[in-house]
Length: 301
Image 1 (cartoon, one colour):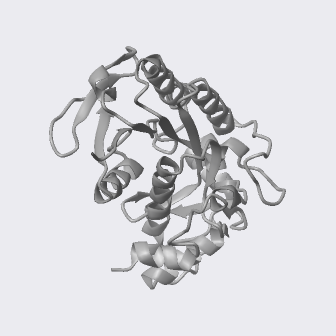
Image 2 (cartoon, helix red, strand yellow; image 1 turned 180 degrees about the horizontal axis):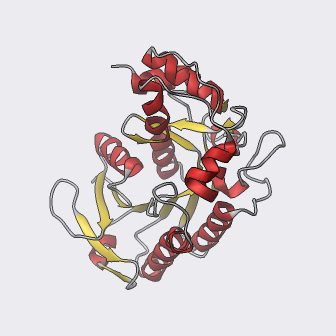
Image 3 (cartoon, one colour; image 1 turned 135 degrees about the vertical axis):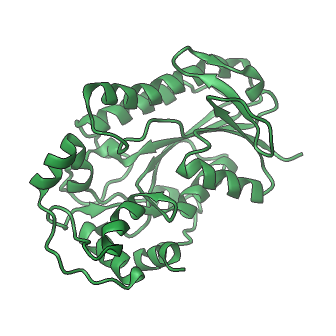
């Protein structure tokens, strides 16, 4: 029988593609969702705020992939939005922990985390998983998220945390947002343009989740980024080249971005070079290790 994988956040950008790739490999996939549904990918209901979960979701399930969490760039960071970003990660993880001890059939939880763990104003060189965490808002959220994940640990249960970088996808996310003004002929680097973006192609990220499921020696935190971080200017140029568009405008000043989106601007004005060496040592191989090839794969018809 094929292994059954339960995904939280399965209808999001990453979850949708990961579901496709898992099913192509012969896995049976189900989702945890606000609304139950039948179909090729059945969904079982859960309500994080009420602390309720349809326990049938965990029956005959071999592993959980935990992607649930409010989008960090979907709305301005008001105090209420900050609380939602934090609670959606910590409380959903805590809810899983309420039910996991009763279901020894589940032997792995592979969870999203984020390179925001390290902060966004890191000036030193390459960052490995042993680097000190940051102190800004997203670093605080990520530390709390990972601490809750660590509470899930049991002798029979592997916990793997993938600290995800900037995901490049043709279906949405950072690549689509940067590409829009480039497509209109008004693209430009942001801030100084020299800040590093530790990016990863969507299919490589999904490949890492599958690799973590299948490699039973993996435990703990791994950086989920490509091997060649690029500056914001380099990423913008690669997108323009793939679209056949010129770049002629000067960089957008940082103060303009701060006026537009507030504290959230730190995500694009800061940056860091994050190393994937740890996951490479487990035998993972990138399909898209180089920026230009990754962007062309996603943006060219």
